[in-house]
Image (cartoon, rainbow, N blue to C red; front, side):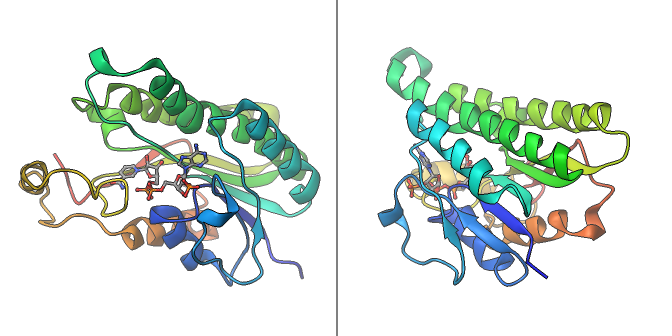
Length: 240
Ligand SMILES: NC(=O)c1ccc[n+]([C@@H]2O[C@H](COP(=O)([O-])OP(=O)(O)OC[C@H]3O[C@@H](n4cnc5c(N)ncnc54)[C@H](OP(=O)(O)O)[C@@H]3O)[C@@H](O)[C@H]2O)c1
């Protein structure tokens, strides 16, 4: 039997790369990055589908290809690609605001739209949108980034309800995952003094690793998680 397909956006590094390593074997992966040359390693047998999500034309082409080439056995979508430009809103150029809105929110919305069409037809599927702890708590110098991440939580809850409204019998789940402070390229440039400050707020007394998120994704995609739907799962070491 053909393996179920899982799309992972932003799979060239960080969380997306760790998730792809954990899911490989059980699923056929569709791996996304903004450019093919950004992949340093790719799980064997994976499909590659690249697009710069800050470019409306490339995003539209990506969704079209996803539907045309992978509708048959698409089982899940992990909307993980994301970008942040940390600074005061007062000094944030509009092009950075647009990039965060397009990559972090518009792209997941349009990919969800494509996936929901496929899942409504197949009567099954899982979407996991990668949000962030700051989508709930807010964070100084990340106001636009935090706003996009809060949007993903509301998007996921709404789509879970919509899937039920459109289908009498179905196995469609939509949820979000909010990582706390995870050691990846996205957090590497945070000044040491800031990191020390965050560490004091984490009861687990360590920053998260990409595998802490990847392990949870493996579970959330599985049948064992069939009753987890329309909610936001926080994975943050107890960050308060
Ligand atoms: N690390 C954390 O502490 C943390 C905490 C909470 C939430 N998150 C969220 O988790 C997700 C993964 O973060 P990460 O830490 O793994 O970040 P990362 O290491 O910086 O990886 C980001 C991924 O997003 C892709 N991406 C960035 N800009 C893009 C664009 N314009 N078009 C298409 N793809 C683009 C990158 O692809 P390229 O290689 O092609 O650029 C890369 O694969 C993000 O949504 C982030 O907001 C992270």
